Length: 469
Image (cartoon, rainbow, N blue to C red; front, top):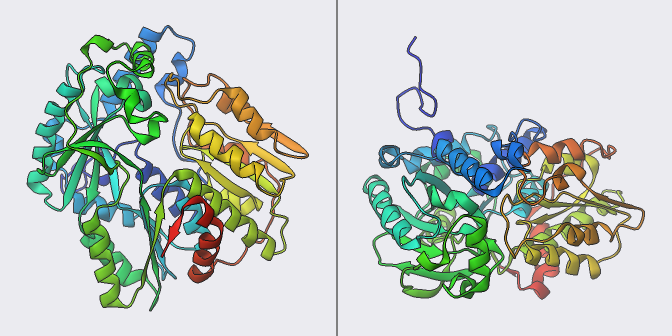
């Protein structure tokens, strides 16, 4: 029997598992949602990265380890040319069990979207995903050189994948030293992939609705109309576009922590000051999905998310209502962060989930404001994911402790996640290990109906700018 190389399928082509970056939010959210729908938790997901061994090491040593780790998982230029986006779409849908579904959720990556899909009993599918590619002799402080290298890689990829837009993101604030070892390419489908269309046609119940989530955040972008665009920084950094100006104090802090030199920072000229950021949904994807739904009798609903906090808060309120309708207390909250989530353990324990996109001060302030305006919770468990980088935008542990302090009886900040914060590396399964200690609260409530969920989201999210149509 012929041995199949790692990262390739039996026919010798790159598998979706090899193509999609290990840190891609789309990869994680499909994995956790598929497991929850099978009744499994995430105990097998994610192993502590090599950086967990370098928490107390000098910064140069830790940065070198981060660059090596990033390089091992990245695609080579030759592999980028072999990427088949349709094959990746098939890999995503192949993770879900074959059954009839009462609907589907897809669009921008968001942890609350995974929780929403699980409450509805439907799959979640991404409208795009991230690819990481080698950047030999790269430099964290050279966004101009990153653009040149990324444009060449994008040209290779687009030659075989015309129905995709490539958004390159160069952000030392959120990616740390790895921004100088690889280029991050957010690939967004410009049409509904054929694998998605087949999956929906074969799996959706007659008349079942589909829900599209769109991250409406904007960012300055350089787009020459070639199918490849470039942005310096990211909304996920917790900083503003002005903070990536060569004279910005925040940028100098970030570059010092990543081994860069502010004097070399020369960002390319921007052509669009307010384009949708990397997690936006391409208009062609939405148009194609709406047309497909119209032809096959599956109405498409759309949720526009101005900031991640809006969907997180509305979904948490929805869960509380759902749990209480099933006779549960709805008074125990878990605050998840980044990769630290487990939808199955949440429903198994009857918890209300609030997901923070990352550990930046803005996202933590979002949950603080929501808690301040909500009916008190008897217990609050907090799972702060260490971002792995030092940045002026990162929340300190005292701010996370303040979140836990909203609990009336139980106030818990996970010590395993806090150990080595903010530069440690924590596996997704850490959330599972913590949540397994929560008492059982079975049976799981019956699945929500899409109409009920949309009405609840419309009601809970209206004052936060969540647009439901």
